[in-house]
Figure 1 (cartoon, rainbow, N blue to C red):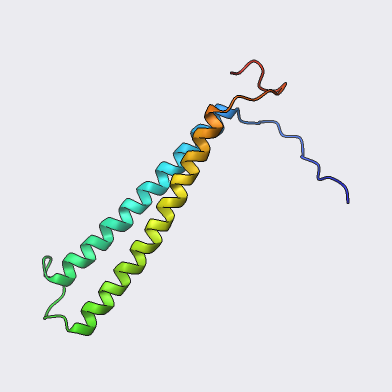
Figure 2 (figure 1 turned 90 degrees about the vertical axis):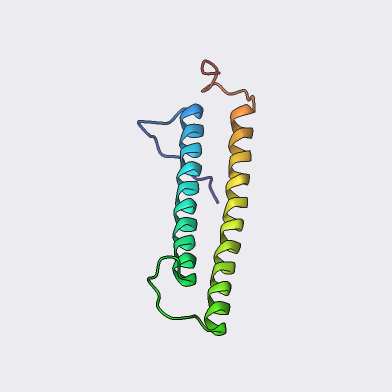
Length: 108
């Protein structure tokens, strides 16, 4: 089996540009999570009657269902936050690591 060939590209980003792009991607994902949490908070407030968009008193089954949904969402968000933290740690390592290659000699 032969080694794969990397195609020629007209534009190859520098290491600093890659680090900036990765940090931007983390920030965008954090922003998306913030929007999800805000929407979930509004849903909970509506459920407990602060926004008066849901009429009547919820029954025990409704409360348990909402609690379960919120718990699942928070579990997913905690896992996503852990992944983003690991991504950030790896980006910081990439940014701090010194290396020796002909391409980067003049850039560091």
